[in-house]
Length: 185
Image 1 (cartoon, rainbow, N blue to C red):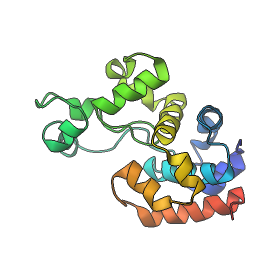
Image 2 (image 1 turned 180 degrees about the vertical axis):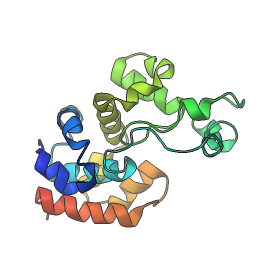
Image 3 (image 1 turned 60 degrees about the vertical axis):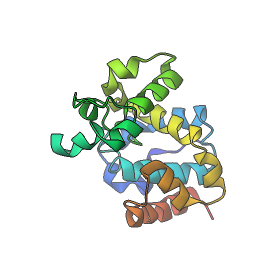
């Protein structure tokens, strides 16, 4: 299933300046990762819409102090970052439309997209529209989110992406719009 620019803007009205840049990469990612039904596309667009501020941000916002949570401690270790305070938190901050975060996730994403570890050397590639979309769609498929979308398991999808229900009200409002725009009953 391909979407049109008016449909994308119907789901994410705040994406006005970015929608045209992301339309073709989104449609290519949908085709490659079997995000191919109205239900799947609606759920995907909703989640990436929230995570990216309606396509405005492809790099996690935050001060050095905020991002230091990814640099040392339990969360850093869970993300595969080194235990030293060496800047991994900044280097492997969330990027792409679904905010791939942490050295371990960057490596897995890099191997899936490129067959090598180039994202460890060039993490900013995930800020480019093609790779921002591809990385999000790869994450979506590799975490079984197509199947959850098929079953209307929206809060479970949110937890898999975010680790909790952060921004749930915004996500639900966008999901309602997405279902109307894409004709999901």
